[in-house]
Length: 449
Ligand code: S3P
Image 1 (cartoon, rainbow, N blue to C red):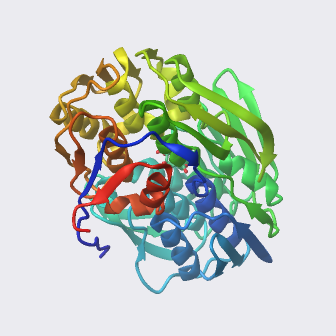
Image 2: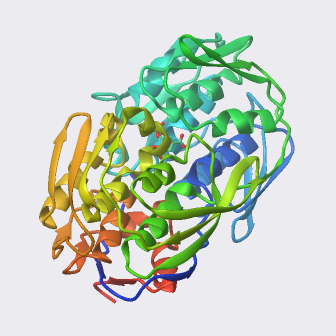
């Protein structure tokens, strides 16, 4: 069973202005996909800038278990010798995806149309998360899944020996569900169609095309209709993974909050399905400049210059949720330091992330002296203005990397330091977080040295 090391208590306190260049690691979503599509291709895929967070390392290990040869050549520099579409071998043992919902859901999709069987598990957080959202559409291809009550891991998926192509409208805004269906569609004959009412991150569609699949995207009255021509031969590629906007969010928000700060965050993806936070922060009054816009690794990127700013609370519409879904925890921390109230609408998906992020942020902010309101789909934070958050609490992170980093960012400006009970999950997505933040001048320490 998936294990978890000893908790690492961390504390952040007020300190000097943040200065310097924040080179955040590779994009997590793109890193998972590069490994999986590399494994499903013919030939050797070269990947540079791969995120070496635990989530991605677990996907690399899983791809080896399905028969691909995955090799690390140096920091971020990897290769994958693929087995081709339909070439997955049956793993000999349980696939442990650790903390990663993206890893497990995409891999389930990728294996669901091969005549093999695999059993999946994960850590205490992942074993609580719903898998039915993926196994329901995979059943339409002919795959069968048996798991714990509520569609929870551990779960065994028996792939379809004679898969049928599928047309599926995703019932929730989820790139993981969309991607699982598209990856399953690779080994089904004919066309697989996914319709999404709300657009979600489109890295799978972009990368499938890059590897040689025929993918068309059209806007229809029902939503975005994505059509994949099944059974392509995917051809190995060179993938340069751009930096992760969801990791960039932490130094960006820290620089906005700590008086006198000015930092540069180079090469951050400006993919419109991912850039909601930066638009929201600008609407709150943030001084963020987008310099040197260009394309890297098939993604639009820019260098972000960020300066300390006095922010004002805003009402964020539900239709922005998907483009900043992973950024609400740090946005809630920022909102606590803004003047006035910030209303985050349409955020129910946060309840089924690595933790229930509405609950985790609400309870932690209350412990830090911030007034919040919540319902099933909304989080409201009553900002206390610059320097106004009392802090002085230890916040529970519930095995959730983004909750841990968000409270540490808030601790940089609260009146009393803020601790998190366990910062170890930060290594799943941003293994160099502490080092990078300290390099900018932040005071973040481990309580046990
Ligand atoms: C991801 C999709 C999102 C996001 C997750 C990464 C992906 O999840 O929250 O961190 O790489 O496809 P959902 O698909 O559940 O919205």
